[in-house]
View 1 (spheres, rainbow, N blue to C red):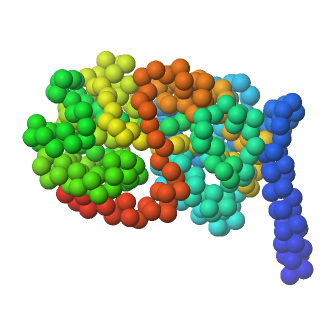
View 2: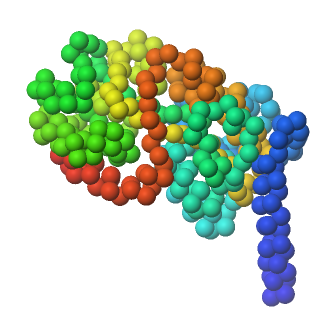
View 3: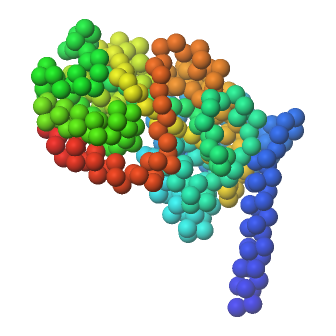
Length: 343
């Protein structure tokens, strides 16, 4: 009994020091920051990343990081919802295995509310677009998942593309429209931009007149546009049709205002067992990785890099806080108006 008590007391004494160490490292600035993080990361030997990056894209970022710093990244990849669930379950069980996160903004904001993330002061913040860093500093935007519409170029002529959301109620789109099953945050952003009452009425009219094929997964939806099963999809991520078109697939994209984007970000775990490596990866994603974003057809959060992209439409950000606080309302409306009426 005495031994068990002593071990418990020792762990309780060590835990705050470890947490403070992560906080102190996260506040480091240049000229010492990068060198100290590199030296510490090499001693730690690697890092564990939880991410919702697609498998094909993940390697484009992890590979250059490992090559540059000699730090091995062990990753666990799943949906953003599963990343959140695993992190919360582990934290509540007192298991601290993860060092860093890269996933959707709403899930990162939920992790902030669960007190799982560490506030960071990165020298890269100054180069990011406005609102890329949350006021609490516990996660920062690395890229924007820009929602656009995509169409099969063999089945839909460019001149018949809709110019407004209201045009989608035209009879020519009957049985030709598709949408992703869980895009209630996109729905909130677009409907809010149109005016809530008007927007809800409009989408009810579109679905009633022409139906809607509801599919799970943005990658799947993009692939169904290529195959022709869904001639026109309303909610795909910008980068996917750009990538597929570049490979010769019969797909292209267009945007209907208001265009909305979901932020994706990076964060460091408050109880990261390898904090030097976690912070080094964090800075990499906000710095050097921004150029890689462009090569992968992502929309970067770097103001300088984003400015050079001429074909990106004007967009507004989906506020993760609104998604969390009003999420139940928009999930219900999306289910009622889109999903349950789909055919």
